[in-house]
Length: 487
Image (cartoon, rainbow, N blue to C red; front, side):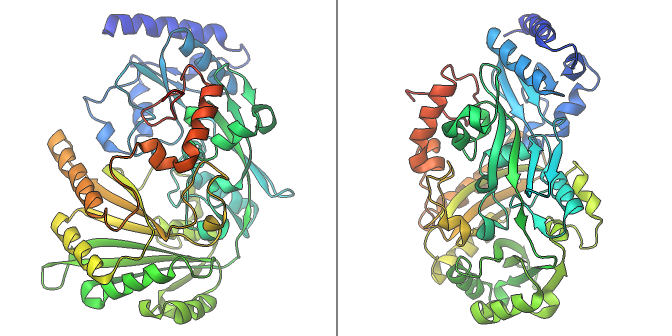
C-alpha cells in the first residue's frame, strides 16, 4: 500500500472511529498518527527490544491509546470494516515485537492507559486492567497488605495483559503455580465488539485466554486474580561460583535437588562467562534464591538438601516480599518501593531469547561441554528456572500452558547487545541459535516442530477449535497467534 492510499485509509479509519465512539468518552484524544508530535514518543515508550526500533522498522499508521472500553470496541468494529490489521500492546516486553510491528499496514491498540487496579482485601481478590504493569500491581498489593503477593514475573515493567494471557511465570511458581493458575475472571471484548465476563464468554474462551495468548481471541481488558499469602519476612540470596570454585559440581547437584526442594524455595541457576583472575575467560554459575520464610529456616533446608552450594548466613537477606521483587530485578535492597511504579526499564537493549525444557539432569561431562561452548560463544547466557511443587501438580490440560509435570526446569537462552545494524543483529541471533542447537541432546524441544504444537502440546487443537469458533475470520492475528481451522 503506497503512502497516499495508506493516508486515505487512515483518514477513513479515523472517521469511522469518531462515528463509533461515545460522546461521553471522546476518542479523538486517544488517536495518534505520524503527523502528531507525540506519535513517536508513544510508539517508542513501550518498545523493550531495540531490534525493533530502527529507521527501517515498519511503523503503525496509527496508534490508539484506548482510554475506555468503548474505544476498544470502536477499533475492532472499524478495523474489520476496513480490513486493517490491529496489533494489541500492553507492556511491550514481547521478545519478537509482534505487538508493535508487522509486514503489512497496521495500527496499534495500546492499552497503557487502561491500568486501574482495584483490590478487595475482604475477598482477597484484585481486578487489574491489562495496561497495568507487574510493578504497579505489586506496589498496590503492598500498600494494602504486607502478607499478600501475586505469583507473576520478576520484571516490574512487564504489562499485565501479555504476561497473564501468555502463561507468565515467576519465582513463586513452585508454591503457587503460574499467574494463569490464579485468575478467576476476566473482561474481554470479542470480535463483534461485545464486552464479556467469564460467565458470558463461556468456560472454553475463559480457558483459552489463560495461557493461550489473549490477543488471538479478543482484547482482554482486565483480569480478576486471587491474592496469595506471603510471610512478612522472606529471604533473598545470590551466590556466584566460577569454574575454579567448583561451579560444575554445584550446578550438577542443583539439577538433582532444585525441583524437589521445599516449595517455598525457588533457586534460579544462571550460567555465563566472566573474566577470570588470570585474564582468561571462565564459567560462572549464579544461584539466585527466593525463600518464603526467614534465613534460619532457609539455612536449615539448604544444609540438609543442598550443602554443596555452601550458603552462609551472610548470603541471606531477610526482607519484605515487595523488596525481594526489587532484589530479583537487580535493585539494591533498601531502594524505595515506589520505584515499582516507574514504567521505565533499568536497561533497554537489543535482545534475543529462546526457551526450552530440561527433563533429565545433564551429566558432568555434558556440563563441561556446555561451558566450553559458552566460552566459545562468549555473549550468550543460560538461565534455568526450577520446576516441581505446585506448577508440576496442576494437570497439563487445566490451562493452555502445558509444560508442567515431567520438567526439571525451564531453560532460557539469552543474548543482549547494544549496537544496531543487520550484521550485528544476525551475529547475536546466530549465537543464540548455535547454543540452542548445541543443547538439543540435553533439552526437550526439537527444531522443526511447528511452533504452535511446540508451545501448547496437546492443548493446541483445543485452542484452534476455540479460535475458529470465536474468531472465524481470524481478525485477531499476529505472527504467533493461534490459527483457525484448517491450519
